[in-house]
Length: 234
Image 1: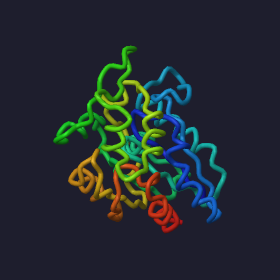
Image 2: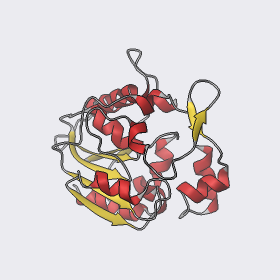
Image 3: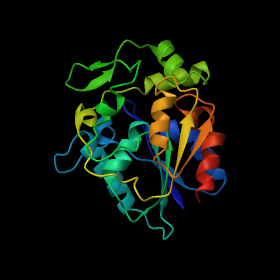
């Protein structure tokens, strides 16, 4: 049963973010890969779609390619959970794993999910109509999003910050692909980006939740914990 990883907002190179966990899964005989998101400039969109709509279509196209009677496990991180929701139900999806992520109801936009956070991530115009994080450098980004990683990993993460189509954040979802699918939610209890309270709100919608003592990116900093949960879903 293959695993597909859908990364969060305002970063690129999902394969890099996922690679520490992918290596452990590979040793266990599990194939995995990251989905390229058009809104982050990683792939071209189709039919003129943009933002969340284009990302969800990219996930569906990847799922269409699956040739495994057991289906796949889809891992959604942060904004990636909203992409999973918008992609809707797909026969190839066997299980879902959410990591500090979101299971939004139909009609909910990503920006609205984050609106009540007490210390929201600062986002502004990248100068070309897209949005990007503002007011951060490698050190402050690492301290907020990768505080449990070493300095070189923090710098590598910062190098993968990118601008994103603004419609990713304002487009209401039209589907809830998480509903009716067996799922696990990883609550990152040391997360400095998404509050534990917001995580638990969405975790309550999953079939089960597991606390992990990590920051926002456990698949980078504690890949053993994430791989363990992927394998438990097989």
